[in-house]
Image 1 (cartoon, rainbow, N blue to C red):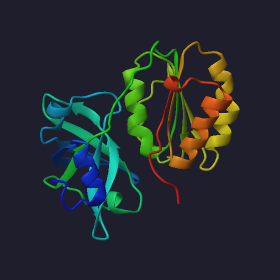
Image 2: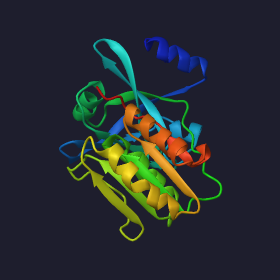
Image 3: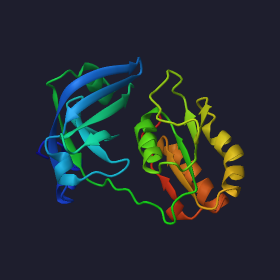
Image 4: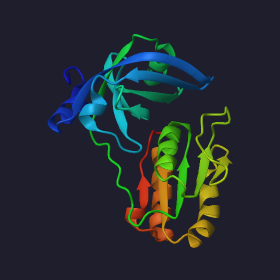
Length: 236
């Protein structure tokens, strides 16, 4: 199945990645910029298991070439072999496919590299930084830690994307585009100072993620095993 996927497909095959065919069963426009698809998993959940913030690589065709993007599973259900994917719609092959997807459509997916290392000791406060592309992962992490309080800095997404926050324990701080780094630097230190065992989750564009990850680790001294940092997309 990796044939026709270029060097990325070859590397994933050598790393013993597992391939599956997903089938769309339901499509819903949550907002004008956010689309939700329910899919059957082609045996993926039974083969790979489930963990918080689990993600898969979807394969698209972009100008005649293979193109893969990673998406977090939402509400995975091993009993029925189904899950949901949520798309923050942008220009490009992935957004074009998601806009046009209808029940019965299929797409190839690869599982390789996804994992979740739960911090020890358990967090006393979760500090999450992201944008619409990272919202499914942030929701999954918040759900995984149950009653633990959390502070979320969220850049953009004023079109009411589907947060799964609880006002009793989650503080959601909306941030205008271009202001995320400054806001986090100004506000994060005070929260860290009051948390015995913080856990920082940073999933923004690659440049912002690197900047904030370096700041949290080097300037604020948060241990590496208490920080998850992964760039979800590349800014132009």
